[in-house]
Length: 437
Image (cartoon, rainbow, N blue to C red; front, side, top):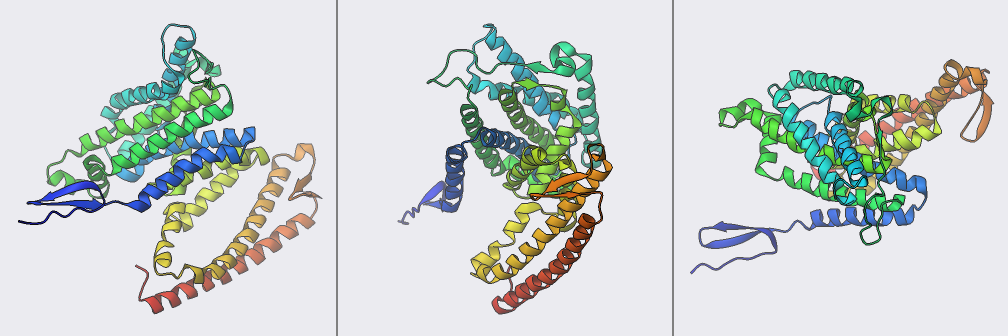
């Protein structure tokens, strides 16, 4: 009689009379555990009100970006109207929350994101039936049209959208649960963190399902998928509905966090923002949009408090990513894995440090140039005296412009020199190890 082989596992595989278990992916469990731990301890480390608010917005954006990446990264569907689902989910959620406050319905505030998710899925069923009839550029154009249609409707139906002022609400309604009123920002953060973690796990689990695998196949070769008997339109439709569900969750959490929803929630600006977040982080990797959401929120919230030209910085950063790192920040991290696996990463650190120094010089040159141009061209009515890096100077004089030019020259030379060092070191490692594949 054959012996039964049993190993540490996550799912059984039965072959004939022998039962085997797939090895448990401990690294994956460690990553998820660290993620959960970080979500718990971050507000205990950064206790300021601004930091808690910033982290709350990061959590919302992470859900939104991951939901968008179900379309772009997993299924190859470029959408210019994804804010429709998060925005309409937010509007439905805020109306339900106001009904809870009026005593018309009973619903715990902690479950309101589920209402937003179901609303997003409903509109995904409605609009997705039309948009997913086509793919590629046609799909992108249709989503843009639907986005503009919904945004225009926000001024035509003030009873639902609240007109230009939007609809405000109060999240502190109903009886408290375990002393949680969701009035303090930290309580709202933990509510967002819980929904963010659950949504992340659910969306990752979806990528491992047959539908997720077929979605990848539709992205890579839709003709072959149709040839073997699958309906690619139905696959796109189902993925869009699921994506709209998670986008609705993000919208409802945004309504709870800000206690107001306006036409901006369904605007093209919001749709463009999530596209930037997904692309900056790396749409080809699951955790890429997580990184992109964090970076985008830092630009939109933290950097906007420091400079009025933050949109210009974001645009320049996006252009640089498209030109030099089209795979996103995640691709840069994944490129280091072969070096780590072959224990050669330490040899690259000096070259990387040289590149980092050159990058800092170029960054300083870019910041000085942007701020000088902005001061002279846009803000000259308030005078030309400005302060940057703790140094006060007059943008109307020649000295700061010369300094900017010198920084550009030094930075470009240092970047080219550091780049040659990095390439030479990589070539040497490849020659010694027989490649880094």
